[in-house]
Image (cartoon, rainbow over all chains, first blue to last red; front, side, top):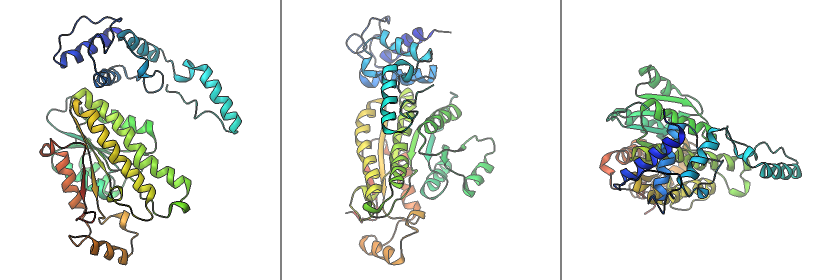
Length: 117
Length: 248
């Protein structure tokens, strides 16, 4: 059984091979675009395969895909999602702000602060 | 996921009646496996379930199109059950008639949720599966109301025109992943949605239609079946208008 980081390396390598490019050994410091030549749709494929395999999607709410530059960033996003982090727990300040805004409107903030379990 | 072999798998949203039912019946007749959902079942759905008690080629679930989490669960469940998602037909929709100034907010929100948001969420979930497969085909049911303006259907027109616009962008976005994206825009056809038209209104539509009649559901189903088939393999980013010429 591969750990998530090994799986991420395997999937990244497979997507590079599917593009007909020689795939190097995948390491966390490598930049997805500049070093590995992945385009945005290739990264989308990686994320789609990982969602099927790991049954989590960190990019639905927890992490902005634009914050992911390297293989290590990708691995960290999945580590956080698999550890059960949610947008609410990851962003307590933002959550508190939402609560205050909802209180000003006189409405509960449950929907605004909704998180993915 | 299990291996779907060479069998094609299609999701048809809103398949309990009308055009959706016609599309899924044609898909079943053409040998595809079909997964569909609607808010509630119908006699036709129950007949199809009875004919396939082990759900080998036909699966239905009660899902409200306004519930994004339920839509995602349905898409992933279909991929696991049938092994793939080859085609998505975004058919579910609600009509909304009346002048905008007198339309209730909750009716506007419902139309946006079912006609547009549900299609976006379904495409998002299904296109992920399709990207992993390296192939896919997305067809959304639009309307002539997206092509020409008509009094009393502003919100409905907005949702359908939005589907057309999204389709053109997605065709460029997903084409390199082997996924085609198109809409089919029916004219007025005999269905529950035109059931509220008066005989006078129907006669006016016929007079303005070069081919001289309202469409039958099969007129639309034939085109959707073509778009589902490999015969349309080089078409993407298009709106195929099926209206007897009323918009020409």
